[in-house]
Image 1 (cartoon, one colour):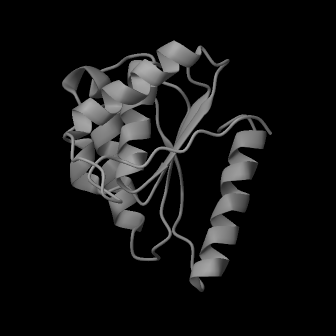
Image 2 (image 1 turned 30 degrees about the vertical axis):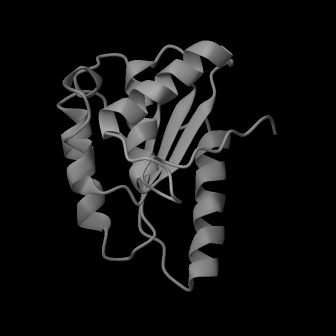
Image 3 (image 1 turned 30 degrees about the horizontal axis):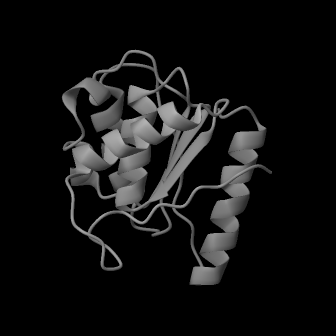
Length: 148
């Protein structure tokens, strides 16, 4: 339950393009303005990278972060300060493509940098509808179980 904010990333659906770093800053500004109590940041694709970046920069304000099907190379484009952050919210990396297990491993290596491990749930198999349902159940279980 609670309020859900939905943001279309710049460059999609006819919006003006903007850099990944600027999108992260915009989400951080939104978190600062709204002063929510430990929200869950969740993003799909590039939005997953933005959620991770904002979560790392605002670790004390964020309850947890879920990133689904994020492009690996974009994690390396996050601001250095975000990737180097010592304090981190619980982070779940997830994939819907059965062949993305190695991508999740690589994402974890890029983001962990020798710090606390990141949780990730394996790829989901089946039809698109099956994948969406199974993934939402896994994410819900992760959040309900204390994110670990």
